[in-house]
Length: 371
Image (cartoon, rainbow, N blue to C red; front, side, top):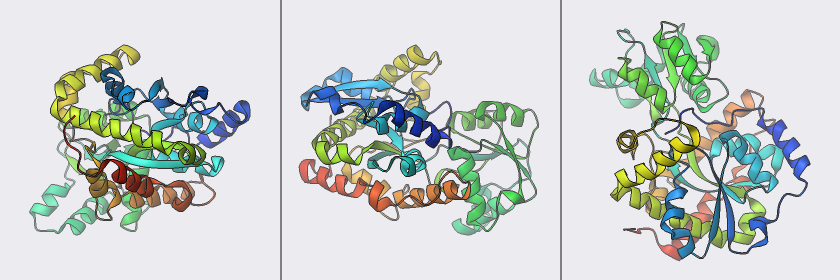
């Protein structure tokens, strides 16, 4: 669960990426020259820090890997992969699509963590705006209920953060019912500052990430629309380069084997898992995350695939809650219309999730259990 919601803070990141690539030349040699070493980029959030569990348990070593965890700011992850500073990293499809045009060699290798309930559209306490749940209770089918909730925003003021997956969620929701941001007044603010302004009386509705949603709901704000009902969810997974994947897919499969094992461990031992992660997170960031918050959010705000079968059901199947192509197409649409991309990014070149999934299943099977 993030303290701020990620799409690379820069849709300006492409320019920064080009500077990074120029400074690094051809980049570092994969694994620092050690055939068993993988330099794995993680970010200081409760979900993307989960590889720490595998490191502390010795599970990477059991796979014959020497994994070096490198903590990276979210908006430096893809530049670090592209430059060769790390071999593999956890990021999402949106982050990859936003830089693929500038790199040419970036690939999304495997998705395992859909951020399904991250963003939410909330109204202020006492608002007369209709929630999705209320519309359904009154007899509207799901599609009509969703349309009703979004269309009532016409002429309203929405506080959110542009150039993030939150701003993208608003843009996508409006476009999906034939509206645009021209039909609403958008106040663009940092997520926490925007929430403070909203709770103080600014705007009619607010879109923030999971922490902001929790605070707003605690203060009495009703959730109008959330998760996949609002927009296709971001999907965390492995990002790497095409050349690294070609040469070291065995390492990607081993990393994935450990990640699924970590998720199964956290399913079974959620408090212990949460203590490890929150202790490290609080130490590195100064945050005040609690084990109780971790347990309350686990497998609710976002989903963690315990095995390949869950990945297929959630991410690869067309009717999955986080079907990757819906998210990818939404990324392309948003980033091209806002000028961050010159043209859509071709998934045939930059998405390898289906093939890597099949290779994983061939090696480990779909229905792994236990840890």
